[in-house]
Image 1 (cartoon, rainbow, N blue to C red):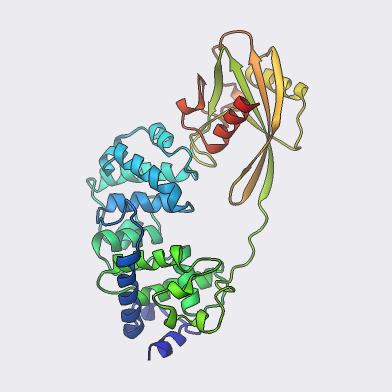
Image 2 (cartoon, one colour; image 1 turned 45 degrees about the vertical axis):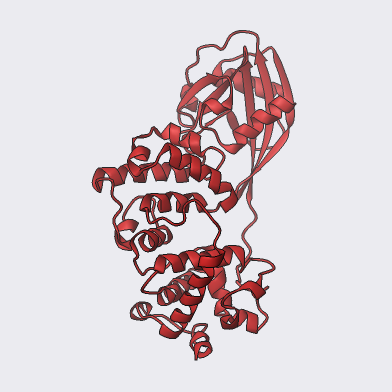
Length: 383
């Protein structure tokens, strides 16, 4: 009976009214098994065993495109510093970015801070309990709203992240391209039908945990899966081919010139403007170049033109690559030294669109900086 219930999904089309319906047999079997398995096998993570919407929200934002092992220490430090949404809203953005440094995707920290201020200003510091209301908050989308609504408030709403997509496409042998919007819409509809009325938060955590620890992208551990006999992909030996996703385009390549300017042991950093890549972070003076090579004469000319500085020594540091999801940055780095003490500088008019502020620092740790800036500092120390 349950397998027949499963078989209808691969070719089913879901109208808006159908999305509200549940599939009792499959839903009950799936949720009971996953919740039982989760209670025995879940990883002891610091954001679990709580219904505090603030803690759930912070963890979900940090976990976006970031491995759990990386997030755990950041989450613990973040919550110690900002134990409530009020503490986060009251903090300076630069302090929040400093605490986030190294976690990557810094726009998440900016959105987190902005949303905390919105919640404190318009909701008296309280998270609204429904998915619809949560999605009205800045920076909270359907997935995050579903996680908070189900785990904090017990709402019967689903989540759909990469782990859940992998579980559902294998469970139901869905061979459609998961990168296609129509497939994504269909998977949300299926997730809506499968989430249980009771204990939806635990179920959502369980299905995500299954994807993260058992239903792996490569070499899934099918023998350890609590729903292996329900899985259509396993029955048809399709685990290695599902889910189907079209190849992503090759990352766009950009060439950059980074100039480390040192004066009496201090280094010049510039602050990027809000919005865009590396929003509000500090970096060494950086210039986009059309080619991968820059000469010392070219660097000296840029320093004179942009900052009005002349140096007594200059040396090239080996190239450095920095990979983002859709872009590859090739950095050519020069380390320059000045004989004089750090001069007072003003941002030239030509740079005021690219940078907001400048500062002389002893180490990049004194300002919120991205990973590439710390990599450049390490290359200078090693070089």
